[in-house]
Image 1: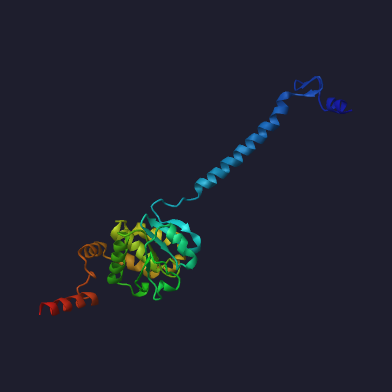
Image 2: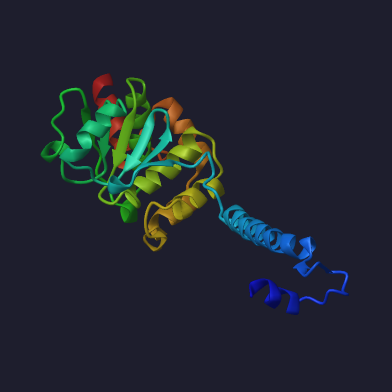
Length: 238
């Protein structure tokens, strides 16, 4: 029967057979082989995971994908245009101010009495230093009261530019660091960032920082806001 067949497959005079039974070394070989294969596959998976670049800890961290919502710091968030369904989340994050870079007000979706609304519309293809200083000053002022959310329509272009300028002017990042986060941070299609990237590259960061500290509305004495301020002061002196 089975024992006879087993004996036929085994040469009793061979050192690998004993009394017609396969050697224990051969029996033990198969579990060892299986274990080795499992270990090999595990090692390949681990190396693949290690090869996947992790998100830098200093970059804005994702909070809610539906609204393209990211946390830039304990007091600053960025997102696309929220909806009424986002209000409970904003309350959970203790957001007390929402800064809107769109021409349409947030009153259509936001009516929470504990959240202040600030509207600073601008376009990235017409942005100048006065727009940036106004936004940075509004962010810093609002942060004194608690967490702030800034947003535009998609949370990538207008919001991305102000996020990058906040990084370099307020937090002291290099332009290269800020642009890398802007274009590779997963906030949207980087092909739409041309105007924003161009502004960041040509911005005089030192002058912007100085103007922000000194309360100036622009880096240029000939900017409309600077001229208005000069005329207003001249009128008062009269």
